[in-house]
Length: 127
Image (cartoon, rainbow, N blue to C red; front, top):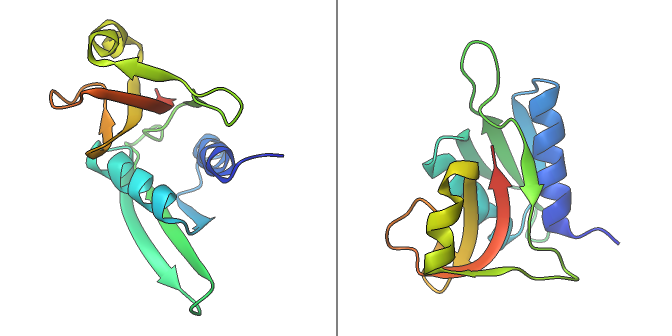
């Protein structure tokens, strides 16, 4: 069984590879906050919430790109439902050259590049 987060990351990765700019993803609060964090760091140009009924909503994501390629080259899910990965603050400093890691913390979704990040569960890595 595939998790909804893995489905979202695979969808973004596939749409980025075929150079599709608009992506529709089923809504959840966590996925919406994660996409806002992607937008804050420049991987996504625009995030919108589309409400169809009280029970059905979608997230509209417009991928950011420069003239030749999209900003999202590769997305790797680090923490999986069967094996959660947690990092402390000292482990974040060693990983900054490998890409941008997104973590869930008690203060919301942060990256390894954020100086206020104290550690947490590693969600994914964007390159």
